[in-house]
Image (cartoon, rainbow, N blue to C red):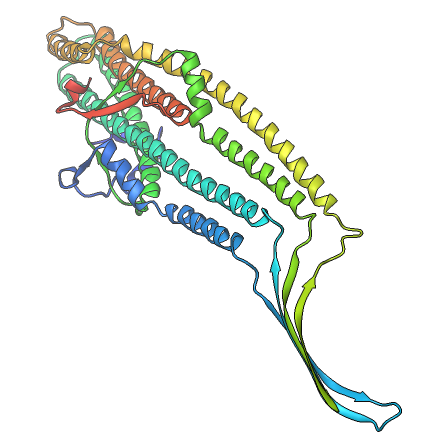
Length: 435
């Protein structure tokens, strides 16, 4: 691909970035294995470095569950000293000691409540991992499709630019007869410049998508990726009520708020249970040897007297957090409903725009381009019609591609919100069949 030197004053910064980017110095395209959206997504799910963070959170939550159900260790206490007996008889001295082992027993139901709270934390961590994988797959598919569209745009614009340049060079070699040929040459030059600008913009878009993909894959920014041509298939939307019901059941934000509300409700019960004291029970032995030997064996009980602290402050705090969690759940449900309706509207509009394009639309554009090339050289097509056809071809391709990108984003937003499958992709054998 050759970019005219006349483009440099107009796109100095963009061209410099493109020329210095990894795409410009990448190995030949033929040696790079082409990726599909499915294979790219699977690579991201296998290699994304952030997955380890969520796995660590799950392990931490499981550790808290183990701690929640573990009894406290028994306490060993002892005392040693000297006992002196004095009175009417002679004074006697002797050694005295005592040993006790006390095991604390929680109030019934307290350990079960702590375990229930810990189980909710495990579910929340696992749900976060599932949500991250879903979001990672969505972003990878979007970026992969954008890269595919940008690479196709570069190819299409480059073909148009090559045709314009070839035709301009042919006209420039002829002896101009009058002012009309000179004007036509200038029109072709201007159109060529605008086409080169579209090439540069598409290259920048490809580079941005490539950076995003490599970050999600855990690859270096210089890693090159070539996308296989694919066709996106979009399903018809279910009715609105079905979408809303599905969002209440499957939306991650709603499910997360539900878990939080359940956990806070359990926390209230735990704080109310903490009003009751924990009892320490255990055997003890004392021995005294001052004159006579005396050994005492018994059972000791330790029970705190809750005269001033009945855990009232913690109970009030827990109830307030539970109310906050309930409000958060209702807000999440309303927000989910709004997001579903908004994305459904975008999806439906974009799908209607896509369906307006007939399967042979772009092939007819290409045939019209070929006819225009032939007849313009013969003088049968005026330059205005010829140039307008080229511009409309690239604009139509761009509009169609943007509609597909917007529809894919809306579809995957709805998939995230509802759990329904609305889009799929299939590899096609050629660019023409894809269109």
